[in-house]
Length: 253
Image (cartoon, rainbow, N blue to C red; front, side, top):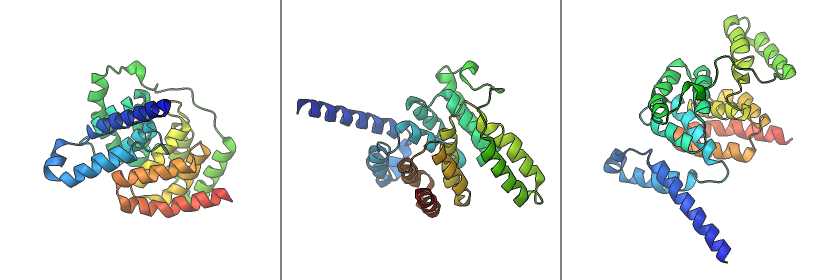
């Protein structure tokens, strides 16, 4: 019983500390203007959702950063960079996430995210040596899967925009996706989060399957949807739910 109580007390302390860290991302103005929103944030979002065991705190921080960047919500993006670093996301992973999502959410969102992250990096003494190399040794390529993907894209869209087809192959799947500074699972994680936050569920089938091929579990994917409801809104998540359901069912057959 003593051991149980000690473990329970430790868990409660950890949960309380985590909720307090989350609360630091909520502007003081919220409580002055909308006390109910502050209560939902502290009790529901920070005190319950963020501490859910289905998805690690580190992954939740990365997913949230990806969603805020996608939505160009730069007002408190710096606080979420700091939160992600505290949760175990490395400066290199933040840097590489910004680079990766430039291709999926647009250059403007990426440059704005870099501007928000820069003061946090400076305050924490992050140097160029801590960031991903421009020219890095790429991860191995699944040549069969890439050939299949490229054949489909080329045959379907080659007569629409060969430039898009070529850049998708050369810049994204033969380069960006093979950069080692972000694990394949994490690239998939932030990509799916960005698609949900942008309200583009029609693009999710490929990337959610890829995420699960890269190691994301169905439980983690479901937890990500629940988490993103708070940051992207319930309508966007419910638009993504049928796609996720189809992917889960297809993979279970």
